[in-house]
Image 1 (cartoon, rainbow, N blue to C red):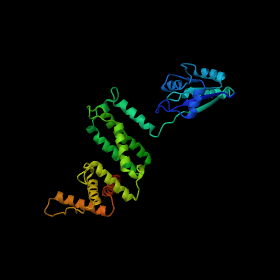
Image 2 (cartoon, rainbow, N blue to C red):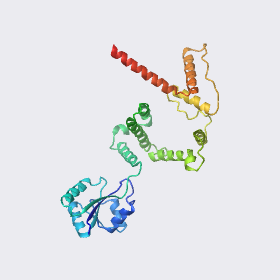
Image 3 (cartoon, rainbow, N blue to C red):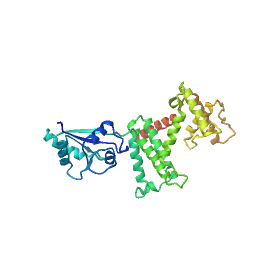
Image 4 (cartoon, rainbow, N blue to C red):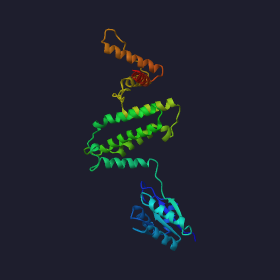
Length: 324
């Protein structure tokens, strides 16, 4: 008779009863031991399995059970019971005839499982007894941090640094989670949570991509973009094609966005001329807007172009400092 000790590992992020068919077979057909009561132990008992809690001497209990029954299952805790697995492995390596040690995954973390961890950590930080700084923040006090983190992610993209981008996107996510957690403490009727944020996003993605979710014809990229804009306008009931543009973005980017939106609907509104009769600031603004319009006609991004030129000039300034 083959003696087998099965270490059953499950995802702590899934409901306890969601096990694979092979995992259910092994826990129903063999004695089950575990180090503490758990939702999984309760689920196994409810399905007709036999579960015994072993508070001390787990290795000895497993070896006795495998000798008596041939196969025994150990329900691992959330941390995987690594110390027990190591102790068993060493013992069975010294005495290979005692039993075979098998690791079985009864369930796996679903994609995005660490997002659940991030939500849980943020909840602890922003709850009573957590981080006083985070608890003292408001949506308005955090606004600058959100912009800063987005700019740092932009820098990582510009530098083609994917490792840095991964970290910077985590910092952006931190801001999203903190805003959502703070919103849970708003007055009744104004509250929302990270689930509301995610739910709104999911609904929007499904609505605006009928070529993926509703069987609509995909067409060209231009047709897909036009469909997106049409659906978006119907959702927002906006009076102007310019509604919804973020007015707080940098001025060059704002100018390019307004010109682009107008161009999408065929509005050929020329930029104002640099009238010699106006003040110097107005003339400068008109000249800059005309430059942005010319860049758009040439298919160039004026914000990115000025950024690159400015950074190159910054390198020249540093070189001059070193020479001095």
